[in-house]
Length: 221
Image 1 (cartoon, rainbow, N blue to C red):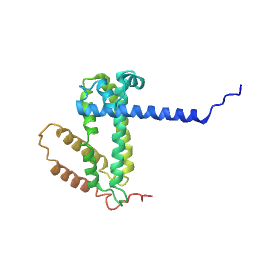
Image 2 (image 1 turned 90 degrees about the horizontal axis):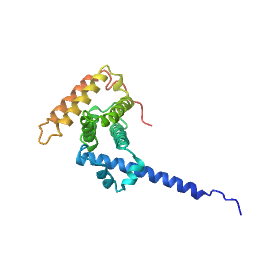
Image 3 (image 1 turned 45 degrees about the vertical axis):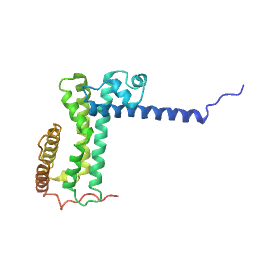
């Protein structure tokens, strides 16, 4: 009998299986985020997620044997996706800019805070106050997310980082806009967003005068 040698088809099949598995896993996690947004975190069940993803319960258990595994992975998936979108938006806003476009950057960040992803992120933070399993997944994810956001902001805004007002401006922007976005989650809530955002833009431009129009951003390659 001739010696059996592994052919290239086996390698292709393995790669295909791995790709399919990764796609299924990502589909389940994206469906979990969709369910959290549409139904609320507390009302979402694994059955809701499996139906949304179009997979069997067995497939769910294969990728996420326990509820904590699913929650932990969903939190990681959401934080990575939100950070990626932040980078994408702010990079696009400042493409080719000689100095950071503060006003446009604020508009881009505000738009992100009015997306389903941020709504879910906020709801998970609130729910984690009394849900210890969620807290165990969310706390380390938030630390990693905040670290990544800080590092990327320094790369995205290299001129603003040099300002004496950078940390203050960053904190003001984050807590003012996120607080306002949270207030908007209540139906018919009065949120004077145009007035507040207009004031924030003027305040930041004033605060960053020590670097704006004097320190140039690196040239885009």
